[in-house]
Length: 115
Image 1 (cartoon, rainbow, N blue to C red):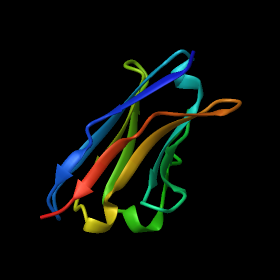
Image 2 (cartoon, rainbow, N blue to C red):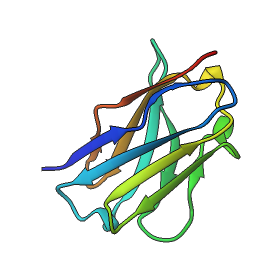
Image 3 (cartoon, helix red, strand yellow):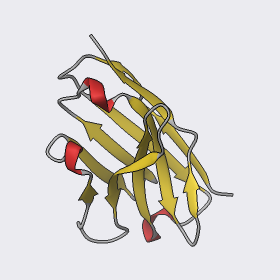
């Protein structure tokens, strides 16, 4: 079955960096778009970044443009989110999502930005 396992979350200082990674299995990874979502306490999940199966037409939510970079490694079946110049407002649980016929979600990884 489809499995998505996020890693790389943790504590970072404002202005710092973190790199999230999502290991995917149970489907042909290279054929499907992948995304990262985040959820702030008490709010609905929001799309942060999306990368297609082919090409370089990536999407970024406005507040992360120029700071976050999504990438994928189809040989390793991983999708990554490089987060630079972190703000306290980036504190959230981050989820990896695979866009098959249905959407599949990982369990999430906590990112906390605080001094």
